[in-house]
Image 1 (cartoon, chains in turn purple, green, orange, blue):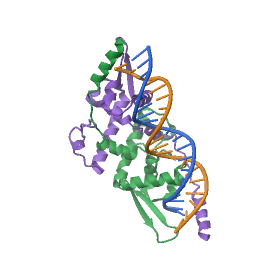
Image 2 (cartoon, chains in turn yellow, green, purple, orange):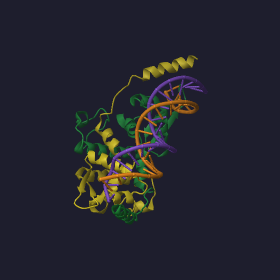
Image 3 (tube, rainbow over the protein chains, first blue to last red):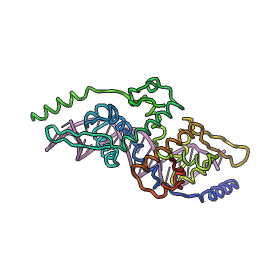
Image 4 (cartoon, rainbow over the protein chains, first blue to last red):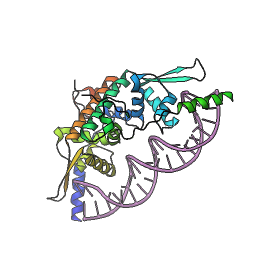
Length: 142
Length: 142
DNA sequence: CAGGATCCAAAAGGATACTG
DNA sequence: CAGTATCCTTTTGGATCCTG
């Protein structure tokens, strides 16, 4: 009983630090790229010298992704300026080509950093340690 | 009607690319750090020359985080080797100190990279462009 | 081919109260 | 102080079918 009072006091005293951090660039950025499939999509677009990819090409490479999710992610990325969409409606069927923008390509470097960190500290993965991993398609730098 | 058949055919032909990528180091790493609050926690531990932080200190700095979530995240990070936990039960109340491990500190560099990318390509943020942002506590490199 | 629409399941996280 | 327990809401994404 006496302890409870002590703890409540300690607790209240401790509660005076408050700060807000939602507006931070960092957290905004992470909000964009922290979502499921986003990295996969970026990598898929990056593979093969950043050539144009069509919707169903992406869908087939990313097995298990549903069109709904892919559409959502692509739109987010397009809106955030990481991905560029071009529509070719000169023929039937219509073709939509997706490519990375400059900022999107620049972001690949971060992904590369993350992979490097993973290899350094955490995971043994024969495939990923090859000069070119077949999963993520990234060559190992350094 | 005739179009439907054409499209079905195109669709089937396109479906022959399949690959798996779950075992990639990259995706495993992102699984760890892509979760909500994780980056905030790492940054909070990093602030102030990486000194020890207690549970309720963290909880107070990260307003809106619930103890349940904080516990979960800390345990994940501890298990993944990014965070170290020390218990001091020599006095009442017990104190639990959390610090970054070497790999955890190393990871801050990636966060720094992400921030740099965000500032370069996307967001105007007066606070974040200062030499030291009060939100994420990171100094701006380069 | 490139999605839109609808419905549904799972999971993540918040609110709140409680404890040693 | 450092959590645990319970309940509940919200978000997310999968399944499936449909269309121009």
